[in-house]
Length: 489
Image 1 (cartoon, rainbow, N blue to C red):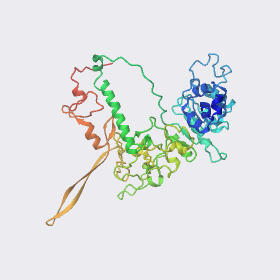
Image 2: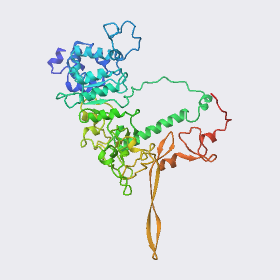
Image 3: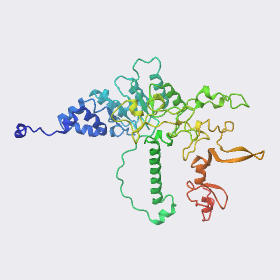
Image 4: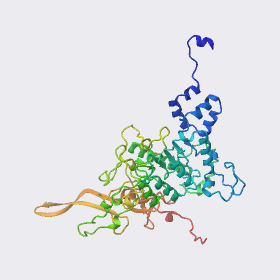
C-alpha cells in the first residue's frame, strides 16, 4: 500500500466516497427502499453517518412497501399492540388506532431529525385517517411538498375536504400550506412484477368447456392487442402519460361534487392528480344563452356546477375542428390548475412543475391537453375509439337528454337548362354516438360498422366482441345449439 501511495497512484474509490457526493446520493437514494437504506446504514460507521446526517436520503420517502406501516387487523382488546407503548383503553379513538403505525414511524424520524427532510411522501394503500393528513398539511414538524395517498384506507373524505378548505382559507398565514400537490384520485402504482410459479397446463376438456375467449391463446392475443393499442396511443400523442392520450376514463370512481368544490377552492394553491372540467356548460356566462333564433329563451338546465374531468380525449381535440370552445391546456402556458399531476411521482424533485411535466418520446414540445367530464360529452364521445365532437360541431339533443346519431348530407342546387334541382354531394358527415352495446358503451358509426352485426336468424343486432358465444353471422343465443332449459334458481 505504501508503494502505491509513494508512486503517486490514488486509492480506489469506495462506495462511501461515491455516496458522500450530494449529487450522486440524491440521484441514487429514491431508488432504494427504506429497508435497504437502513441495512446500508448498519454496515459501517461511515454509511451510518451518511444516512442519518445527509438531507438527501429521505427527501423521497415511500412507506407503502414498509411492513411496519401496515395495520394488523387484530381485536382492539388484545391488550396492546407493538407500535404503541400504552394499552388499549376507551380513550383511544378510531383514527388514533388506525394511524398508529404511521405515527410511530413519524415519531422515530422526528427524534432522529429526519422528518423535516421529507419533501415527497408516498402513503399509497396504507391506513391514513384524515386527522393524520391534516397534521401533515398543517403542523410545522412536517415539510412535505408532494403527498400521495392513493387508495388509502380508513380515510374520511369529508373530514379531509374540510381540512383542505381550512388550509387554503383566505386568512391563512403567509407561506402556508407548505404542501403543493396531492395524489388522491388515481390508482396507485402497480407493484413490481415478480416471477410467477409455472402453473400446470389445464387439460383440453376443461379449457374447451370455458369457451374460446377464455382459452390461453385468446388471452395472449387480447394482451398483445392492448399493448398495441397503448403503443399506438403513445406514438400519436408523443408521450406515455395517459392524461395526454386518447385513454378514455381515467378515474375508476367518479368524484363527488363536494370534491369539485374543494378543487375549486384550492386552485393555484394545491394541485391534484385530477382537474376540473372547463367545458362551456360550467361557465355561467356561456351556458345561460338562447337555444336558437326561434325560441329566444335561456336554457338554465344547460348550466353544470363544477365537476372533475374524468375523460382524457387525446391531443387532437374535436374530430371536426380539432379544438374546443374552452381551448386546450398547454403545459408551460396555461395555469397550473389546468394540468393534473402525472404518474409516476417525480423521484428527484418535489416541485409541481416536475410533477405536471409530460415526458415526450421524441423530446419535442408537450402535446395539448383535452379533458372533460362525462356530462359535457353526452352524445358526443365514442367510448370505443374515443373520437368526440364539441358543442359547436354537434349540438345534440338538449331537450330529450339522450344520445342520438345525426347524419347530415350536404346537398347543392344546380341549374340545368334553367331548371334547378338538388344533387347530393360526395361528402357525408356523420357525427354523434349511439348506445349499440352495453359492454362497449356509446359508439360512433365507424365502430358500429366494425363491431355490430345483425343476426341472420333473429335479425337482432349484437356485438362480436362482447357476445362470447356469437359467430360472424349469428348472435350468442342463436349460435348456441344445445338444449335450452329454464333455471328457476
